[in-house]
Image (cartoon, rainbow, N blue to C red; front, side):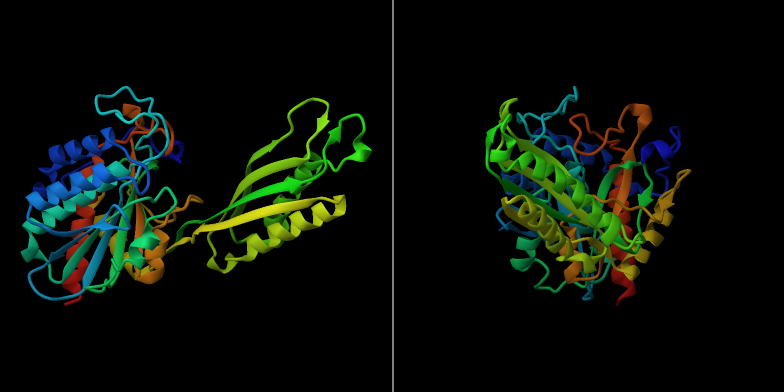
Length: 406
């Protein structure tokens, strides 16, 4: 977390090539325009129109309308070679912004509270740069502007629409601006970086009645309370302590009065884990616990279980590529953080299941400027100095991966 790192540090941009550093005013302008017009998943119409207008002005080949609002850019280098994809997400969150800044959200109840406006600006920056420097790399770069990362997920429908084909992608990279790391640091690791995301909704079906005559009822609240406690034993007693996993009940609603035993109780929760071998396990175990407790009390239940995103698993070779490039670009007291992980989820995982790749964190917090609020907070913002660093890391990954492969 941010608090574990120095509060005072400087960021040296001298390792960012001058042609990319000079893009800083445009990167900030693009990011702030996008920030003012945030849109939810699969509704990124204005965002897609803005991205398309820039690409068209630069003479870059692109396709629109993929998975509703997605865009794919294709930039060919100086000669044939392998294909590297770069992915950026475009959607915002249903959050009312509390920041008092000139570029605050103009859409009531919607906000770029996770940095996707910065991701899109960086992707525009690398598109512009590569188009101007096609002689510096062989092969082809695909830049994927993806909708709906925050839900219900745009990666899978984009893959199904063929974004990794024609030409076939050999590897993929992507970044997430990360306010859990200080400005300019890079978090990258091989293997699991982010967790699988699974959700469950459960309704306990009991029998209501008077609070003073409980023997005539099947108390859904008592049953739900036992289920909440029992679910915690899954990680504590069914998961190897060496593995990491979380089962959280985030919502529990039941009852309307002091003296009425509720006939139903509704709970919602999430499951997170890194190990892909757990796919299907938590769904089975959670239902076993719910069914057993309900049966013991004479209740029924209705369970909906959603496997949203698999874990983000980085390829060792591509992670090493990103790490080596980051060490060339980053110079801070912390530098590259090799074992950075989070139980947060990301549908970049679907891309990484199809082709080798690496997703990494680019530190964007600056406590000295009060730019260290966590992601999904209504005052989230980040230090825009990080934007050219993102472009530089992508540019060096393109050159190193594609030129080495020829």
